[in-house]
Image (cartoon, rainbow, N blue to C red; front, side, top):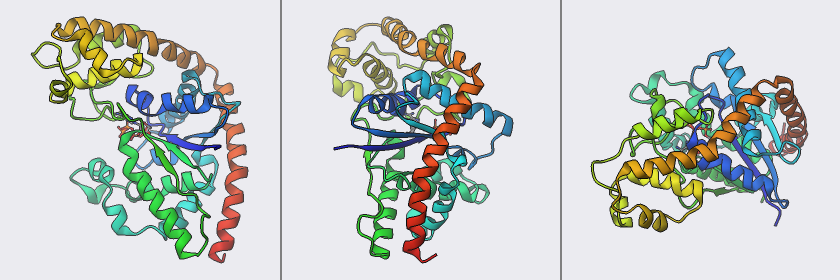
Length: 333
Ligand code: AQP
């Protein structure tokens, strides 16, 4: 079956190993499969749900496109565009916000985490963010959405919104109910400083993540300083599951090399962490450095990056505006 793929990444800077292993690596595989129609969106409307510096945002939009291309997404095969250039996203988000229920949104854990203690000061956009995400996906009849584990709940909400709209307006199958594509293993890469917290762009300490623009020295230094426990390397899966930092580092190694977790445990069982860390740094440099160098090269080619976005936005606009016309008819506009 032909799959229609849609996914987005926020241009909020510091794209990291978690974004790569949890999402972008998967985007590349999907892009390479001839059967798939893929759309990858730089979700700048989502980015402004928290305060952004306009100049930095402009640079981060280009850096996100550069990251897509440097990682292996082919703009001739997949549509790459930025959300704000296709106004249908904002319009349909409004329409769907009249379908979504406030009770559903109140249960979203990401809002609770991001808004923190002072919810009253969080933007309305941060609260309704999952509705915009539903609009992004449903506008393109996406059948599959590759995301990291942290987006699972938002995708379930998107499915609920699609089903309610179809039911409310008696238009069976109008909005396709999308399936999440979440990696079975390593769907959540954790901070290098705390194995219980997700690796994240907004974490203040740069040592908590491997950025996709890091140099070899930065990668080696961050792995050297990554938190571990005082014990030697674990020798069983049970032991691994009780040691979050060890688990995260082994997951990163396994995900990058494609070696099964058991094999990695056997290889390093009982050894000193420093031995493992040396191997991990080597693999990271091998896999991430070429991407980092390519991103830096592409960032000097602003016209090339802008053209990818312009071409992609035109293509996305054609698909999205067709869907908006149908939505208007169904609603009675
Ligand atoms: N740590 C992670 N492990 C696995 N997947 C991850 N993703 C993000 N962090 C991890 C996945 O990357 C895709 C793009 O994410 P995003 O940039 O749109 O938003 P995010 O999830 O909010 O990213 P961050 O890094 O966590 O940003 P902040 O710090 O702003 O909250 C998504 O598919 C996401 O699942």
